[in-house]
Amino acid sequence: MHFSDGLDDVVAAETVLSEVDGQAGRLIIRGHSLDELAGRSAYEQVVRLLWDGFFDGLPDDLAPALGAARAEVFAEVQALDTGLLDRTPIEAMRALTARLADGDSLDVALRLTAAPAVFTAAVVRSQAGEAPVAPDPRLGHAADILRMIKGHPASAAEAEALDTYLVTVSDHGLNASTFAARVVASTRAGLASATLAGISALKGPLHGGAPGPVIDMLDAIGEPANARAWIEGALEHGDRLMGFGHRVYRVRDPRADALKKAVRKLGGGSNVLPGRLEFAEAVEQAALAILREKKPNRPLDTNVEFYTALLLEALAFPPTAFTCVFAMGRVGGWIAHAREQLAGGRLIRPQSRYVGPQPRRAA
Ligand code: ACO
Image (cartoon, rainbow, N blue to C red; front, side):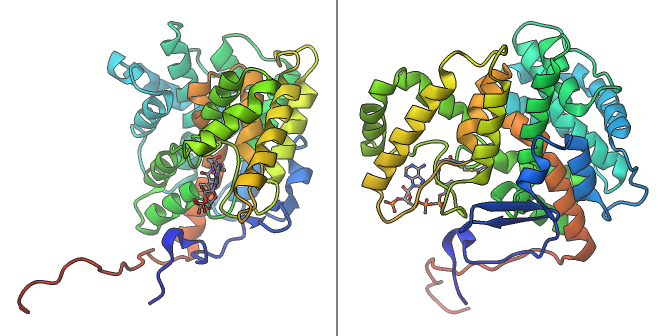
């Protein structure tokens, strides 16, 4: 039997949810190009698109139901004790999410979609010594997330920028966290179990944990003149440059441009630091040039996480919580994939090849 390290040449699911074309640098989400959705649709609309046909009784407008689910899950915030507040935001958010009941219904799906948003906001505020802010079910999901984090209403431009981000990362083929969610869903464990598998896989720095370290890299570089020496030093040390490279894309990740556009749009009058985007662009150009020199056999380009870092920084999320914000968007995709797996897929159970020692005597 063929062994594939990392499974890059294995097709493990057929899906109607999204297509990632790594050669053309193109992403399709349920029949729509990323350009058609990012900056044009609210997150709730894209979740509705992803879930269409996978749930009975799906309302035409998901926003009120998702708002009500935010209000419901807020009750779990009382379990946020000092032990959890000592953990990283994603560990604390995951622990609160694990308190939600499992199941396969639309109500369970809505509560799980609300969970990363409500719990992350409560964790971030509590870690900053501020009281959690209860959800406002009448608001759109993105506007309410910003309000729950900041403690006051966000501007329309900020809410639009966060919506663009959540939509951009809502689904992306069989990435590691979605695969983990589908594996768990294939055992019929339930949507909460699948979502927790997704959060756990997303947490790693090779997947959704990259944007926090992008800010660390920008801060360590400090100014464009330092970029080359810093990047060369990191590569000589054997480090990977966060925000670059992708398993599927051999060209620029189209999500990087969608998010860069959102940072630029947010620019004037907001909290994008003056010159921050230009500085990041200079670091990006230096990194791409050096990666081409040092890794000539591997096309390495900018991935989604580089401009995610700039956008979430501009929206004043702390870098320690960036992966949680990724989960707020990707959860809609995990749930759609879990339902798709349940509807038509078999138990996912590949084989391993034994390369350990044989017993000394045959039994
Ligand atoms: N910086 C430096 N070198 C890199 C990078 C990088 N960011 N990415 C890959 N490479 C190099 C590897 O060192 C390796 O070089 P070698 O052949 O000389 O040893 C070569 O490219 C191939 O590496 P693989 O590990 O086989 O590539 P893989 O497809 O597994 O990598 C990954 C994909 C994990 C995303 C990788 O590019 C990486 O680690 N990037 C940095 C982390 C990051 O930004 N992650 C977010 C990805 S997007 C997302 O998940 C939402």
